[in-house]
Image (cartoon, rainbow, N blue to C red; front, side, top):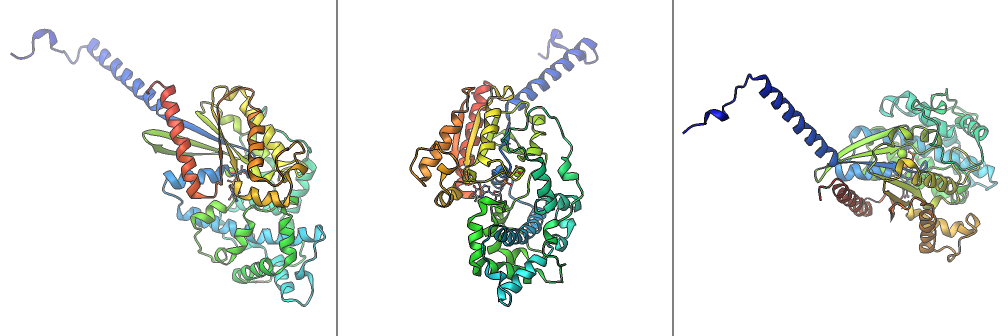
Length: 431
Ligand SMILES: Nc1nc2c(ncn2[C@@H]2O[C@H](COP(=O)(O)OP(=O)(O)OP(=O)(O)O)[C@@H](O)[C@H]2O)c(=O)[nH]1
Ligand SMILES: [Mg+2]
């Protein structure tokens, strides 16, 4: 027999239609709850230049198929400007620190190279359309600007602070929108007299390889602001001098573009949707952080352990490690993250060993009781120090990292994404 009468349905019956509608809504709600359960939000936090965006770049390499040609071209232009800017900084700082330079001796070959480098305006040689646009370049040049440095000096408080609480500001900081006068280039008192990029790259490499004073000054780079990857840039200067050069993955990992605002990167991993939020870490950027503090599954705090003897870019009277301590303490114990687990990356471990040899930790952290110049003791000291700031008693997972090293980061990032997925499933009752 066919269907009996009691199961027959009148498809135009309003009661039936309402029931159908309700069950559809219920189904959609269940689906969206399921999707939310399968979604994690990971927030990258830390002071400026600690390595947050570099960690994100490694995630992009692992889960998003790497970088586009446009990104490779952008970095090529930015790194070229930084290569020239970094050599100009070394020459100028050597004079300030009273370090004699071979290239200051008139008549020598190095003297001619130095003149070329100081006269060169790297930003003028860049095609703005390939390098993030004119406003990006204007903002960018601030870090080499004497005006910018003078303003930072004026704004200096000399005190470490967390700086994210209280102010809600989404628009660009005053510093970014300001008209820029690239003072560094004016110091040479000359204009660019038409050298090719190849000639400038050669001059930079000769100065780097043959002037002991430049090397001595480089060894003292904790006394001033220098790009962390400057040595790498100098060695590869001839590549960035090529107009159409596309950066390799390694170049991009070593390259630095300060993050402004908060960027969002999404990818799918084992049916879990990852949303990674990367926040700019400099003081003016931290005022925007609070906008993304809601519903964070896990916070990843990146600490540059090698920077215990360096001062902030934003305030040259404040030690970078002191600032990071204040920042971590305020975030870790904040009500925003009361139920949020933290991951702590002790980053830039590769730079730490060499740094310890040149710059004893005890000079900056007198309570350090470990062996002098000892990598392991130093890492343990910082790990203990940061864990002791956790008054909220939340779980904190610590990893020692070199964010520029793709092989080792693969292991670390796989471990943490696995851990986050497991915890998220447990929390949402799916395991
Ligand atoms: N040698 C070395 N360099 C690193 C490491 N991690 C990051 N860097 C370099 O440090 C510089 C700054 O890194 P970013 O990732 O841009 O720092 P950030 O925390 O995103 O900085 P903001 O965007 O200003 O907050 C870049 O030149 C990186 O290549 C590391 O572990 N070792
Ligand atoms: Mg960044």
